[in-house]
Image 1 (cartoon, rainbow, N blue to C red):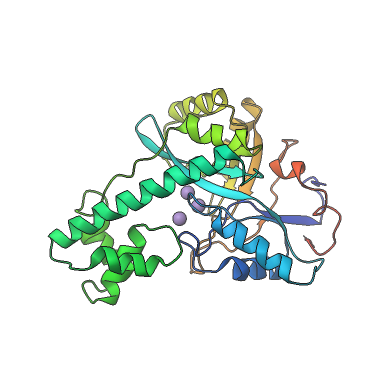
Image 2 (tube, rainbow, N blue to C red):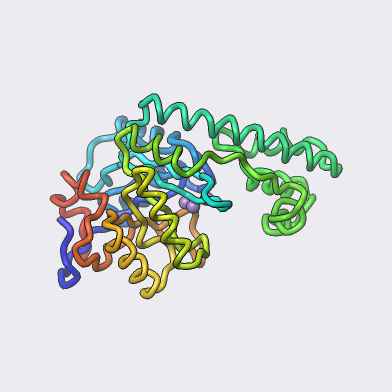
Length: 302
Ligand code: MN
Ligand code: MN
Ligand code: MN
């Protein structure tokens, strides 16, 4: 189904998006609607450390009339984990969300996030921001508690003028509310995904700002842990960066994935849907599930 660079028909795919189940602005069904509008053929909702967004979107789909333009929805999640002193993001795609390993992993991360949230809340309260934890929990609603929710509460209370001031003064790196989360190890996260029949994908590999050597070390360890995929196109990226990642994928025989990392509309934010770049024959992870997307005309643009 994946056409070469010379083809005029391009399939839009997006295997990296966020909803209100984590730190995205759109509800799962609104994201689905936007993706449909934009002609996305295959979509994965990859909220941070939760599959709630994917599950909610699945439920919404069951309630509506089947439409040819509706993107094929692939199970997804974006896990945070530790590797060599850094925090790495690993996407899980196509896994069985009910699998025991997956459930256990998600539960562990949920607990870790709540504990971290409590710590942030206590620290902010010690600074005099009474009610910080409760306020942040309210802001979070049913989504995963994180620093953005503390920021939203501080803005709403008038403690800061905006989100970025909250991070600059209280929540950003090195500030009082910068509590390191207890993330699992890379190998553990990859194991949860592959045990549940999913594909593990290194998300936005250049965002970690590793040297080429260190990035290669990450790939080697990732493969040793049974990881097989790498994101070669994510958000804003130059042609050179894409070419670098394509070479890396080819060298290590990795499957490639593409995603916008869409969180919300904004002047510099990519919209959902990535036009497939020239992959020079590299296998795309979507080929595993492309039963439908390749055959509908609704998912193609000229
Ligand atoms: Mn995010
Ligand atoms: Mn990420
Ligand atoms: Mn992301």
